[in-house]
Image: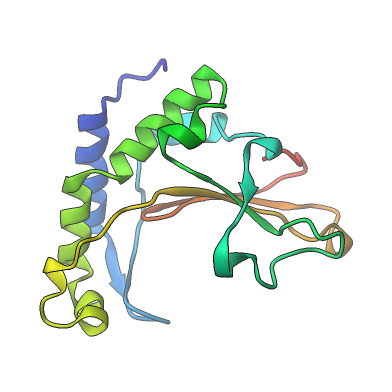
Length: 173
């Protein structure tokens, strides 16, 4: 990895981003981020987007109703844990390993619990802060149905805090 961001520096930056995020209640209580990661690291994330074959199908309820006419999924994922990114090329694995570590950090979890307290309380009750939570950072890839468009939308969404999305004609993003 050729950038100068350590896990600690990135965690501090993302925590600050979460503290600055605007709350929104439509359609449910959540946070709106302006910028989650520093620009140079975000550029490295875009450069390190995995190829189509690196992803796997979503599991559970996410699979229901999310397949194309050819039975291929419309959304695929990579869980950002070492065991799920070990197959990536070393330069890509380095970026997504750091991303996963930052998104799983205790510091970020604490800020999210504080900032999302109202929504968590309505779901889990007054003792919501005692509910054990386990962050699962996921990079998802949305694949538009080929029959509906000549230009696929490739969205890499890192669950928990960031989203990358751009129009592209490159099918592997």
